[in-house]
Image 1 (cartoon, rainbow, N blue to C red):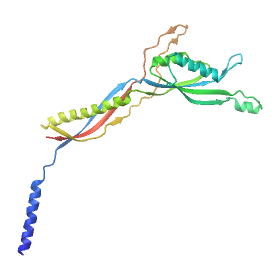
Image 2: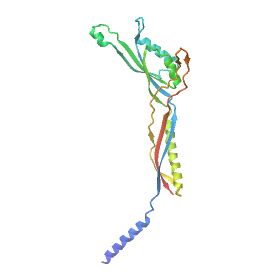
Image 3: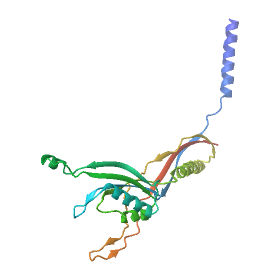
Image 4: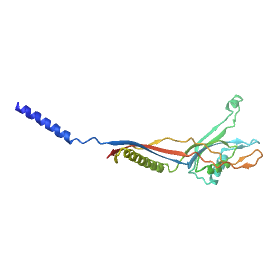
Length: 237
């Protein structure tokens, strides 16, 4: 009986010591921070579709001539082979079924080629458009826009978002007489997608009804918005 009482006493003493060693629960504050910036795209990718055509006298302008003229136009505005890439190369006949029905032996196949051209500004795009062959150019459109220093900008925005979280935690803690301590967790900042739809702001010279040229407005591409949000947990002191 004495041994049992001693054992129970020892268990009670250990439990009491363990309770004394437990630290009080650490107070924390969880906040979010964000940062954003707007930049004008300086990488504009334009797809240009070119196709063979016939002059009014019936002479066919072949694809080699069209291609060489287009590449010469690109060089004349300072573009190099790094900015001009072949997207596709094809041939087709718009009147295939009519010619098949009439059993035409030599259908007038039209060759076509598509290029992707990278320019750095609206002004450079205007220069390219001004030198295009209207007869050969079937279509051109902006496929995408980008910013050349996007990774550097994203890094700056992430840092700014974390700093914004620290600032928010500081004034919220001060409202209840507390002080912000060390950060316990910092989540990797999440990018909020604000990808703009690329569009071409018309800044070329336009002809009025009487044939006189009028200067268009000085319009640029829609700016790209970069935004990051982050969650941070700080200790309170």
